[in-house]
Image (cartoon, rainbow, N blue to C red; front, side, top):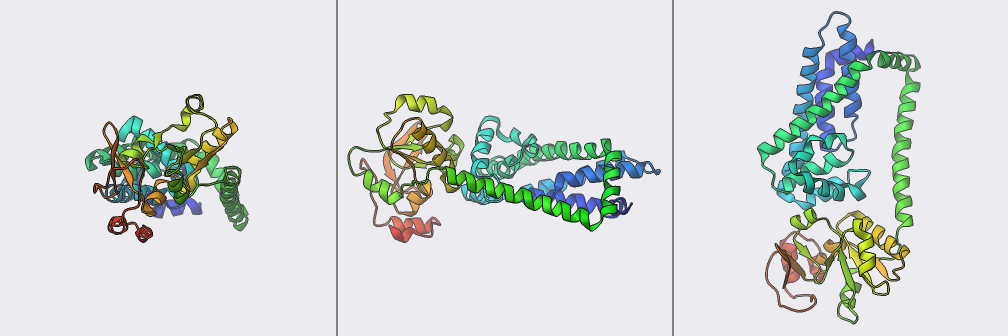
Length: 360
């Protein structure tokens, strides 16, 4: 009964801290905690306690903790935009795909995606700052986020209530095993993290080893024939960062058959994205090479590296790409068919928050 006594005394604080920690991106077992608390409330009700009132109290604390934690990332997304998304994605074990998938979910469903975000691994961690970056109103965010957390927490508590008897047997077994049970759990958790890390390393090893630097791309763009440049960022990412490498063609890796049919396998293709380690670009390059394209490479660092090198970018307009070259802080530059490095671009980059503008 030691676990139930612990839940009885500190259950509200445990629920609040666990759910808020999970919302902040910390590796805490929020859902298992809710299940255990639900089971403990059910077991204690068999000894004369009520069920509904304690469960509602736990549910309210879970919603309060989750919304408070999410507000930190929401405000970060609202203030820092894409930089917050890149930071929070590094906290995810599935960081190579979480941002792009979430952007597409959000583009289709809007703020309503928060109603189900907690149920989908990786989606909640990115959709919250994305909501801030996309300009969702605070009131709408709190309403949808709170409702989604309530549904998620209610499920966890309900599972605990339904399987209270089975969990009681499990608790008793753990109590008999003592430290051995703790060791088993710790080893299982370490094995899971190691497996995810190994799988990520194996993935990177199978992707295209060849990369093209931004300086090499710049040189190619001043020669003939000109390379084809694919921008495979999502529509939502282009809304947050409405600039492209001049001459880029928007491409969707989900429409590979259309791309294969429209482009010459002999031409040089350079692919860039905004994902960690250019994984989406590398995947697409590998697939096109398997389909018979002979010279397809991802761009190292993507659009960010292009900016940091001091090259000009093109601003996107509502109807497509603006033919006038602009820098990333919105000042007009000279019109030309391909980008050039401008003398004042390094200072502009540094003012905009890019630390290596002195390369220009």
